[in-house]
Length: 228
Image (cartoon, rainbow, N blue to C red; front, side, top):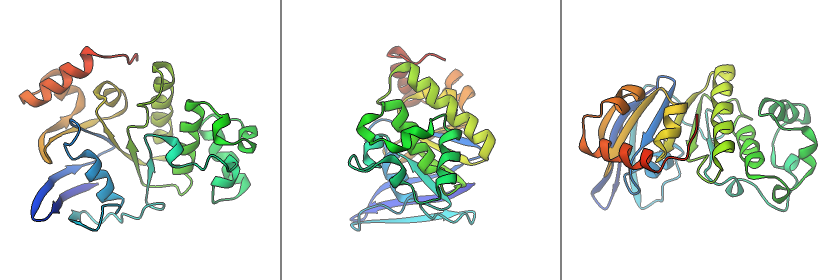
């Protein structure tokens, strides 16, 4: 899937002006304020009305909840704490149980409320919800940030396994380059809304050409808690 042009402007100021291609799984990385979240919101058609954006692509139909789904950073933003898990899906009981099995959750958890589940269980619930519509593109918004290292590894492995099984594309928006290396095939590095460097993630990490990319990599791995 090719995004040949994505521009986002606010009062004639260009906030994002990038292009990228998702062959299988792509990590979009950059410092806070680089334009990662704006890009994600543009794809979901969730930008505020004060912003204008133009999206040129290869014909992929961007329909949230149908052709693309989001796995959020905090699962509580997608779940009602006062509603049983089973009531937060919009499909048949059989389909819900199939989704739960695919993410490694016991169907008994469907009768519980979100505060009764662990962080890792909740993240698997929202992954199951994101897959409910069998999307072609899965958007990942820092889905492992709040998890402990062991649970983080489990979630990343689950996402890789699900992609192999279901065949969806992935766009992983993150500052966690160590996790991106584990999950993604390619990487795009953005700074102040501009593309700085992109390519195969292992090659970029081994031989970054831009000083900004080198700084991101060094800062990320210097504080690394991720274990493969």
